[in-house]
Figure 1: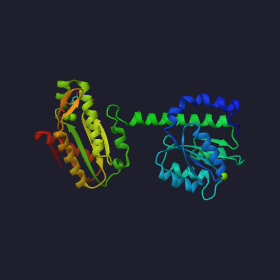
Figure 2: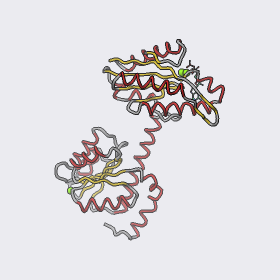
Figure 3: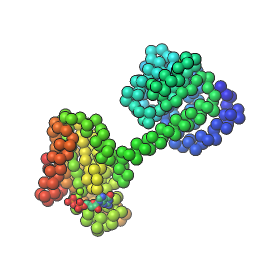
Figure 4: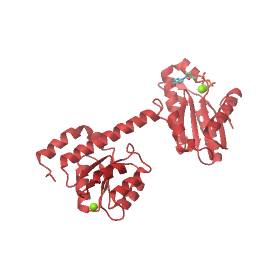
Length: 307
Ligand code: GH3
Ligand code: MG
Ligand code: MG
Ligand code: MG
């Protein structure tokens, strides 16, 4: 290990400065059966403004990982009682891609094929102990950069740019959408006479109404899958009680109809219509049935929920 004030250590800090701000978004799980090793790695990470949690073996790590949903990087030793590092990685990778949770393997073992073993199990990178501190920081930085890029790409591919709700692609990719059957509730919602808001107040105000509406949807249905299907049309997929779902939709519709929104000094009021279905069938069937209900709601005068 290199002492703290060595030139190598100081040099290592410079390229990382750019990262420090985004580092504070990351929580790192350090897994090692040696308390001394954990403390040392913790001190290195905390100097980079990373938040650190610890686990004393692979089994313990799985528990800590369950408790802290926001862990984005795991740094794990190989030889540990109860569950070793490679086995831990295999378990984590059953549910989490390298772009969701990054893993760096770490070991003092001189087993020749260990690097390959770690990488094959799904580690993003690997370091042999004792490591050079500057190399540790370089690999840490590059792993976090890759993680940030992957998360950014995922966001670009799956979120609607204007409203930051999920997009169609993400919607159809979810397990709840992919299931061929099973009880589910689905609602298609559409803002009434939205074109008039654009025509009267301008497209920019229309955009802000969409953002406001999307935020209201996310608040009402934080436990459901909310996606923008296009234009002023949104879809909600819900896996629980149809009674609760219908009550909440009704409350949402009334809440919006009774509200007066002040958007950049424009006083805006609007209503929504929705088509709702609760059934044990596939999501495409639910959508086409909800669409027919939505059509009826429009034909019957709008500001209506038809099921
Ligand atoms: P209806 O009650 O029958 O749904 O009438 P409507 O006016 O809401 O529906 P229509 O389909 O005639 O018009 C939808 C409008 O939504 C037309 C389109 O320009 C506008 N729109 C679609 N996407 C956006 C967007 O991202 N921003 C804004 N400002 N307007 C959008
Ligand atoms: Mg060990
Ligand atoms: Mg509309
Ligand atoms: Mg529409």
